[in-house]
Image (cartoon, helix red, strand yellow):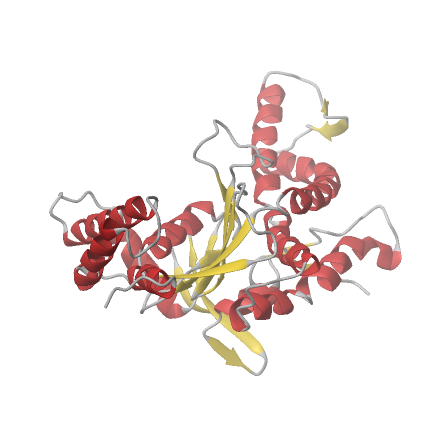
Length: 365
């Protein structure tokens, strides 16, 4: 059975960002970074798709689609269970099998996207083009593959390079996925729930791996932080492990500003082409992105609000390091100050922080 229409981002993932369902078709809003055009209604069936991306051309029959079938059986069909566990059930204690399952299904989206392959092809194509321009040769050996140069444009050369390197790329990516899941098993899992009117967006390259400590990118750095939007109101944070990490627990937190602004901007920067979400979410993001990337004066209301919130949280956490008890009057005072200024700071996660200390036994009323 021919399966040339292949999604590199699972439809089951994209459906979680849909705003309309019509006769079993799920529709999302998209913004095209390349053309700058906004489309309020696009079927997920036609989004993040590439013809024969996973097809193994050197094999026959159904064997051609072994990789496509692997992703379909082990990722596409099982992702809804991961979403239910983390978002709907909000399960806080998980088994080792469930954690492996969560990591495998979410991190697979990092390795499935063709963005890295396309970047390599563009770079390699430019190298070959330079050689072609300075040579009368009709072919060139590139990484063990013979690339014909005879009467070929730069676009044709890139197509040849992509075709000859695609299978090796896919095999390497699958091996790296397995290794990364094992490497990240002892990291922490945090689900951020977005409170208020704002929404998370996602993209055609939804897994962001970030490290502000290391110089250069290292996929297997212990300091890597990973962010993945799960739906318009929830995002997964895979936090670097530390001595106090609890491997079988999922932590839940609420936010209505900091994570939302940061993660949406990262999603935009990380995308190769498509920004994806509900019509409300994508339109609001485009307005926010324009607003928050403008140079601002120090007295900008949004900047003042952010500074207020940051100072309140820093004061509480600094006092908490001296001990969480009713004898720590500095902590009690900082929490009273946080409560008093919560409306000015305008953040639900401040309320969440306050409640956690109250639940720990502090007398705050």
